[in-house]
Length: 235
Ligand SMILES: [Zn+2]
Image 1 (cartoon, helix red, strand yellow):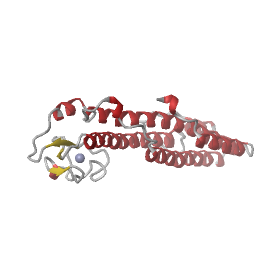
Image 2: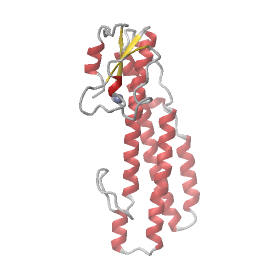
Image 3: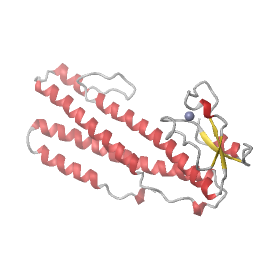
Image 4: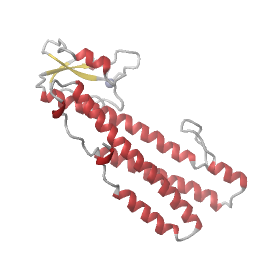
């Protein structure tokens, strides 16, 4: 729930720091405005991301558990996502400020100013001396972060559901298409006692699409496992 999220202390500290900095020189003020703007954008990503990751975790639990909705685990603080998100933001805000300072230190012409402030879509070219470029790099990193954290939360919700449902064995399944990599291919259809299987993504590679599905010791999938996969969030 959005209303559960506390006002962000990190953000207010960054804004205060930006305000102090802004009172020094015009150049610092521009830099501080960039920093503050990036902080606001990142705080919004954080709010959205934490809520969305918790939703995915709960959905994965619900899809893989016979238990009632009440036993769906509580939301977590998604600390790893939040920490990495702000790390990316710090790096990119600093790059934008560097880009700005580089432009200003040369003495800025109209052409250079246009280049500096030209808006470029996220999928567009990366160009030097342009503020949108580091911002777009940040956005791409946030997208990538969100994808890996989605896989992690979906897997974790499912793992909790299996644990609570007393699942004894799991089978590793790849997507069995042309994109399956050399790391995952040998694991396809291997059976592991629950809790001893490698974990998709964590033990393989980022954005791994593989899944562990509940089975018996002979590798017969338990009821409903394939239905869950057809409607799941994996693709
Ligand atoms: Zn994989």
